[in-house]
Every structure is written in structure tokens, then in C-alpha cells.
Length: 375
Image (cartoon, rainbow, N blue to C red):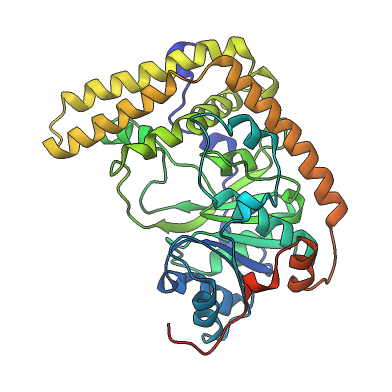
């Protein structure tokens, strides 16, 4: 593998691409939203839950208010459970070696998206749900029939992601590559992901590209498909250079691992020798991208923000060592084994959501099902 082949512009070849028009339809049990925005952003999830008669599970923090979110959804006639997840990370509802490894380093990630998704998986296993949809609150679904078609494919696939037809949901580095004319594809992700019970034994580590790691089974990629359409709402990847800095470890690990899988290798080939070659290649890509931005006709203010973000990424990259990459993947494998064992022991059929939350130790004061308040 040459130095220019280590980070690939696309990983679409790892996926199957079935025809959704010929797929059998199946029912979704629940739609799970890691909710960080105000209640009006839930309109798409509410419409989907009502049309598909699915339970709506809202996991709320940041600007989202669980009480208001539950009221907003319940007044639309949706079965809804909204949970205030603020502080659950500090409480330690889930304990992972990957978190401990990064806890006292600059790579520690103060984001609760992974916690929310793992909580959703746990509730699904404990209630006996078999088909769930993870849906971010900034995603629009043009055709809700895509969801039942995707659910119908779960007999042949562990997960089915909807293709992104909106703002490309890439890292800052990959956005910059595209913006200077370098080919750069997207992949399926947690923003619109239909998950079958066969994949409940995987978890989302607290790192950028956590959804890519969720798709792995410890050896390679789970059988995964892409179909249908989801629209990612626009955002500015260069607004804050801290975004690029916080993404760099997860983007490096994911691009490195998926590049191996693209080339027919296995996770076990991601050893120190591999990372000793991959890391300099990654930094060359970022440096060349900075050079292309500098010589481009991009508007000056935008150009400056792009360069600041890319320099933040390469600065953080220089703190990443082959030993850290190998150590993180080893910790992730250990976490995966423990999570799998826990999931095997927690599977239920027909338990209520309330019973599931009680068994997880979620205090009832955090749980809301709707109330007559102004929204």
C-alpha cells in the first residue's frame, strides 16, 4: 500500500446497495433521537413516529428540554418517552476502557452523543425492540417509506443507513479536501441508521466517527447497506477550529481502519507498523490541503478560517502516536467484548420502557411522557 493510498476518498465499496423498491417492508419498533436542539427540530422524528406507529425515545441535553419535548410529541399523538440525560456521563452509567484511556489527555471528548446512542441500545435490548432507527434532530427524510424498506432489509443486514443527499457529513479535513476539488465521498452514519437486534451487541465509543466503530464487529465491517435518502441540514465545519481539533483522533483511527478494510485487510493488521506509516501520510494530506487552500480562489475570510481549522487538526495529529492508536483499538476491543456480554444478559421480550429505565438506574424524575404546558 503506497503512501497516497492509505486514506481513501470513499469506503462505499464496503457496503451493499440494494434496491429499496423491491425490498420487503417491516415495522420499526422505535425511533431514537439524541436530542440537543429545541422542540421544533423534532418535527421530522414526530412525523415518522406517528406514520410508522413507532415509539419515540428522546434523549435530551444541551438546548433540548425533556419536559417540553415530551409535551410537543405527545400533543401530536405520538407514544413518547423523553429522558433528561444531563450528568449521566459523570454519574458513569456506562464505563469503558476507551474513556479511561483518554480521560486525562487532550483527546478527552466532552460530547454526549455516544452516551445517548448507547442508552438507546440498552433500552431497545431491555424492552425487546428488534428494529430501531437512530435519527438526528437535524436530518430530514423526504420519503418515510424508506424506513420500512430499510427495516425489511435487516434480515440480510445488521444495519441499513440512509444515503445522505444533503450537506456532506464529513470531518473538517474531508470537507476541506472536497472544497479544494479533491474527490471525497460520504458514508452511512448514526444520523439516519436503521439497526437490527443482531447489532445491539455493538456500542458507540466516545470518539469522533463513533458510528463507524459501531459498524465494526471486532474483525471487520458488519454486513451493512445503504439505501433511500436522508438530508443533512447545512452547517459550517470551519466555524470553530476546536471542531477539527476534537475530530482528529477519531478521524485518523476510522480512516486508517476503514482504509485497511477497503484493501482487503483485517482489523488485526492495524498494528504499530501500520500506524507508523499511516500517521505521516495523514499529515501530508493535511499539509497539502493547506497549500491548496492557500493557492485557491476561495473567498479570503473563508480561506483564513479553513487554514486555521486545518492547522488545528495537524497540530493535534502530531500528538497521536502509533502506540496510542494500537492502545485505543485494544481498549475498544475489550470494551466491545464486555458490552456484548452485557447485551446477551439483558435481552428481554415485552418489558416496558419504564422497567427498562428502572433496571438501568435512571431516576424517574428524568423521565417525561408529555404534559399540558406551553411549548
